[in-house]
Image 1 (tube, one colour):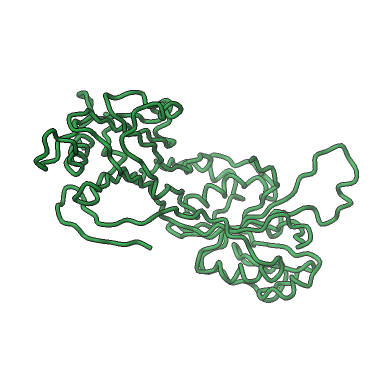
Image 2 (spheres, helix red, strand yellow):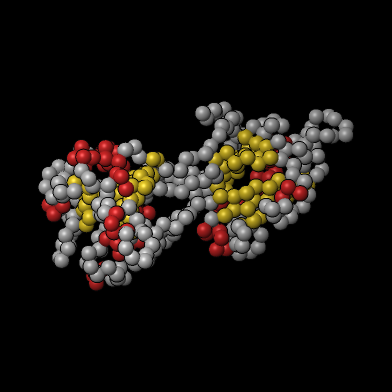
Length: 380
């Protein structure tokens, strides 16, 4: 859903000290603080909880014709959303387990993988789709006729195919191993083929203050296992194929959250809402000295979101217009986030944690290709 709230971003500097006294105009450059309706600093929370409304404020480096940067009036009675996202500099990668093979010896078996990401969608329509086909080998059990396929051998044959170089002479052709890694789990007929996505490489960082170099991205994929030669394995008609194994997503991929690159991008996105004048973000930093960044590279930030309506409701009574609410985003280094959260919880109540959970399940005996050793690990 699109968000049309008028948004002000506060990036709390590393080492910030919340003021316990003074007004918003006593803030040093970059210093973040919380103030009552009378502009009195509060680093505990009791004063803003008792006040009819409060402000968030931050000192500026360039104060020419402007004071400190300040939010609109925030009243607990007018807050429509109050939540946080805990920063995580590492993204989880998708893990899919292929199991329960029901393959007849001598039958061709195909695995089709279809991967999606921002990168891949620029190269391939409907995802990066590629298939490998192997023949099920008979289990050496002495049966005649042979009725059981050797599942570990079948999985190993698939892994060898997956690791082959992409067809063609172009060295830039994409190979499965560019985006996936493969493992065999177990050594018996219940063996599992584990397919894991790899972390995505990062985009280049252009030397342009007005560019948008940071992009939300993750890689996820679908897995199809069926008898016979490769088909398009369209996800709409996959059930009509002769599926010969089950594919379970045991861990879903996630986005990173609260990285310094993300917060730097937010500073650009919301710059025009928080500058006192000369709001355009010029491509040359020297043309607009109002642009300030308080992000420290390599720092992980927790982000807090407060969406609220106008404190004075009489402002909504006149005019042919659409009511627009306001929002503040506080990006706080994780070392300082708890203190800020405690103060705001005193005024606004418990905060909702909207951090994306990592969905995962259990794993058992593991054989990592091409090693032949096994270890047993139980993940709660």
